[in-house]
Every structure is written in structure tokens, then in C-alpha cells.
Image (cartoon, rainbow, N blue to C red; front, side, top):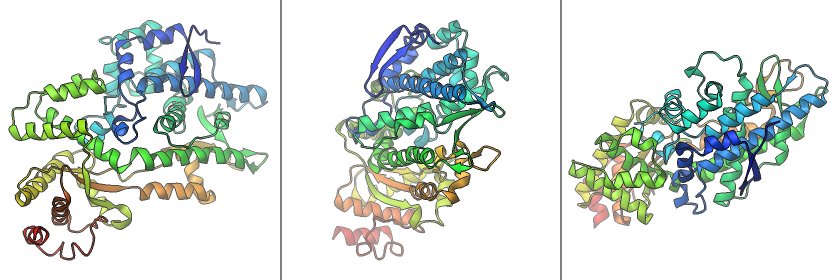
Length: 476
């Protein structure tokens, strides 16, 4: 059993014990930075209570990893089943350390910056961990002193180290799998601080097993040949909670608008070489805004836009939706939109279209009213549905998603995730008349997609008339 030396009071889980070794990791500059990096980025502008940080989430993840480990070991020990495996003390130690540092590579407002600009690599790629856990950082040196660095990297970034037979697959599954300690913590934490009344049941911690032959973490849904409905229900409740937060928080239209302001501001300073990735990596939320405010921007147009974005953030003047192109109204157009506006190589095209749309609207209004485009991945899947399960009657473990035909609630969730996809066009600072002109510009640049915000009686000739002709009608 691990020896704990410190107890931290957590608002979500209560008292959390930590070892002396774990405290040495937490008391590094890189981990302390996470105290000032909000877990949900710009969400606090929509849900004011969402001020919780990645620091306490990291501690909570380590704590829930131990809860899962204790349950897994309890089930292994009480059953006479040679197929069940579990964790020894060394395994628990390594998993907890990996859980503590799993978010160390996050930038302030990282998901907004990485996903919406396309200019920076994702936080969880191996290269980011290699840099963050190198000898050049106090965190990397502290982890080396524990003698556990290679094992931790085998969980968080296995491609960085040689094949490590000391670290089985289920160690990684517990920290960064499907339903894991990470997601079980942030679901509870995000619920508390956004004020949304949805939770999974604590019983979910008792449903996990480790399969000795395959070294996989899984959920046992079968007993004596029949389906354990109660266990399945607990897993589905977790999936439903994840969907609910995706709909109400992670993909909330106002949260996307707020995130766009931050992303566009960072995009400007990166393209102007006024701020480096290395500066972003060591910044806090407040530190990022200091960088943006004090950045030297030589191009006057970029400076004007940057100042607009920063003022809007400080005053909570969020961009408004000029167009929304949901998949349910644009099934045929989704693939083309994603190919042009999402992923590698799309950033330059997106910026060019935004600039052209902004210039077109400026001709009509005489004012700078910037456009911002947001296109998510078409693969808005329920990752947690891929959790491995033992289905009654099956000899092999299979992903839960393969059984959606037998679980109507799961099938509905998967379809609901697909229907959540929306392409947004936001404009900043437009009044009611200018918004109508902005919608007309959208119709010109996206003539073959359906904007569900456009009222037919206002824009009956939207696709056939020129923007200038429509403007004359609107400005009468």
C-alpha cells in the first residue's frame, strides 16, 4: 500500500491523500502553472462558476484512478477466476503519477487555440510531452528523480520510449482510455462548477475489470449467460452525461463564440511572429492576455483586429451568429465544408474566406465587422462508447459500440452525437441591420448550404440577387 503524507481537501471528492513523491511533482513550476489554467477555457464567460482549474482536475484524476484500482483488485481477489488481473503497488504508483501530469502540456484556452486556429499541434501529441517532461523543466527533473519517468511516458506518450513490458496496456486505459479516471473526474467537476444537475452514480467504479490474457481494461456485462442490465445502465448513464455536457457546455454556441475571440487573437500574434509557442506553453490564462495585449504587431489591420478581440473579451461582447449550418439541414454539404474548413491545411483557406467576407461587409456598412468561421470535425463520435466489454455469450472482448443494435439508448446517443455537428459563422459588433447584411454575405459565400437562422420572408432572393442589391433593400 502506498504511504500517504499529505491530505488535500477537494470540493468534489473530499479529502484526497497524496504521497511525498506526488507532492514533489505537484510543487514544480509547470504543475503550479495549472492552478491558473481554467479547465473549461472560455466557458466561464457563459457559466460564471466554471473557474476550476486543470490543477485540481489533475489531483482528482489521480484520486479516481486509485478508486478504480481498488475496485478492480477487490473483484480480482474475491473471485476464483484466473482470467482476472489487477494492479500491484508499483502499478498504482505509476498510474497515479501519470494521472497527475497528464494535463501538464495544456495551453491556456488550449482547445480553442488548437482546434479553431489549426496553427498548433494538439496538447496530447508525443512531442509536447517530450518537451514538457524533459530535463529542461523542473517537472521533468522531478519525475526523473522518482525513477518513474520512462514508465509514465509509456502511459502518456508510448512512442517516445522503447517497448516497455513493465507497463501493460490497462495502465494506459485507466488514465487515457474511454471511460477512465480522467473523464470520471471532469464529468463530476464540470457539473459542480457549471451548476448543471447531472451526475453518474458512484456504482460505476465497481464495474471495471482487467482481462489477464489481453491485458485490457473492460466492463463485465455478463453473468451466468445473461446481461447485467444494472451494469449496462451505469455505463450508459456515463455516456449520457458526456453527451449532455457536450450539448450544454463543450459545444454551446456562446462558448464557441467566446472561444473564437481567444483563438483569433492568438492567431494574429502567431502569424505576426509576435508570440512564440514556447511563450504560450508556459503561460497561464492571465499571462496569455498579457502576451496578447503587449504583443508588437506591425501590420495596422492586424493590430486593429487584435484590439477589437481583446476589448470584446474584456467586456464580454460575444460574436453573434450570422449563420448556422447544421448537419440535419446540410447532409450533402457537410463533407465539403469539413474538407475545406477543418483539419490540416484548412487554416489558410479559412482565413482567406473570413477576410473576404469581412471586406465585403465593410463595403456595405462602412465599418470593420469581422467574420469568424467555426467548423468542427465530422467525427463527433461518442468515444466512451468504444469501451471494451464482455457481452454475455461472447468469448472475446468487444467495444460496446458494436452492440448498439441491442441497446436502443446507445444507438440514440450515437445518432444524437452525429446530429450535434454545426458549422457556425459569427460576426463581431454587428447591429440588427448589419446582421441582416452579414447573413446576405453568408448566402453569397455559401450559396449551396442552408442557414437555419435566415428567415425566408427577409431573404427570399438571397441566393439569386447580388449582395449590393439586397443591401439596398435592407437599408431602405
